[in-house]
Length: 472
Image (cartoon, rainbow, N blue to C red; front, side):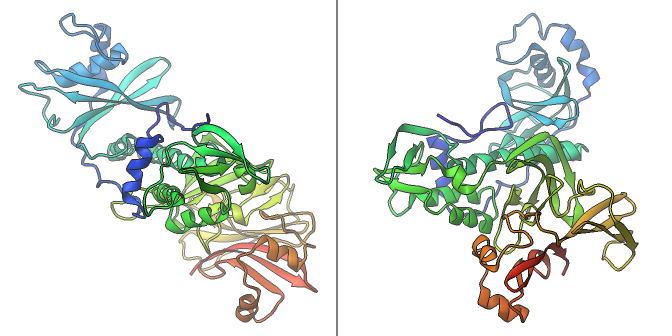
C-alpha cells in the first residue's frame, strides 16, 4: 500500500476516522478554531543546564515517558516543586525549519501543583515544549500552553515562534505543515493514497484501485469527499480546477471510490521539490515559498503562493503548477531556457550565456527604490523589476521569438493555431477575437491586473510568445 509522503516524522492526517471527520464540514472554507493565545514566556536554556547533568531525575525518580531524559528534565523543571508531568510525548519533529538543527515539539498535560513559575499558565489543556536538536544535544527554545481547540500542533508552534521573534522559523514550519496537508489531499489524484483490496481491470483493460477510507454516504457523491479535503488546503477555484483536470480518473463502484492506476501520468505529474532549498520571496507583496525541484525532466524553481484571511489558516493559491481559474501559476508562465524552466518572478538570469544587450531605466513602478532592466539573448527578451535596496532583479516579463523554446504546455514559435487551442482548451476563440480586435492575438490568464500567457500569430502560426505580469 502507498501512503502520502509527509515532511514531518509523525502523521497528522489520513485514515478512515480522519476522512470522516473532514466530511463534517463539506464546502466550508479552511479555517482554524481561532488564533492561538500564547500563554507563556520563553524559558532560558541556561537554566536547564544543571538538570541535564542530573540524569533527568528529581529525587531519584525515573523517566516514565517515551522521550529523551533531557526532555523529561525540562518538563520537571517546568512543572516546578510539587508539580507533576502527565502524558509527556513527542508531537512532531521537523527539518528545514531551524538552520543546521531539527525542531522538536513535545506536549504534556501538566498535573496539579500548589505554585508555578510566574507567568506560566497550567490551566490550559496541554503545554508545548519547543526544543532544538543539534549535534545530538537538545536545548529548550521555550514553552507555551494552549486550549483543547488549538488545532494542528505545527500551526500552534509556528505562531509561538513568530510571537517569540523567530519569524523565519515560524513561516517555514507553517508552510511545511500546509505542504504536507496539501500533498495528502492530492495523493488520491496521483494514486499515492492508501489502497485497500485487490485491483480490478475494466472492459477496456484499465486497472482500477480502491481508495481506503471512502464510504458511500446518502446524498453525498464520493468525489465530493475529495473536493472537501482539497478545500481545506486550496483556494476554491484551485480545488475545483484540479477536480476538472481529473475528470475520468475516479469512479464509484461496489460502494467504494476507485482510481485509475495511471492517474499521475494522466495528470502529467512528475514533480519533485528539495525542501532543503526552501526560502521566501515577498516580490510584489505575495507571500511566496520558493523551492528548487524538477518538472518534466528539467530543473525548475517552484513558487508556492499562499493567502490568509483574518483568522483563517493559510491556504495555497498556487501549488506546483496548479492555479485557480484565470490566474496562471508562475510555472504555467515558464519557458524552457538553457535546459531549465525559467518562471515568472524568478530572480537572476536564465542560463543562456552573456546577454546580447542590457538596458536599464527608471519609471513609476509603484514600488519606491525600483528600476527596470531589459536583457536580450538570441530570440529571448527578459524584463526585470530591480529593487535597489535589496539588490534583487525579479523577472516580470519574458518574450520568445525563436523556435525550439517550448512553454509549459509545449507550444513554441512555429506551432499552429490549432495546436495552441488544443493546448489551451480554456480559450474561447470567438471571444478572444471580440476582445482583442484581431484573430492574430490569443491571451490566457489576466492581461490586466495579473499574469498572462500571450501568443502572436501570422497566417495561423505562432511567431511570438509572451508571459508577463501586469499590475492594476
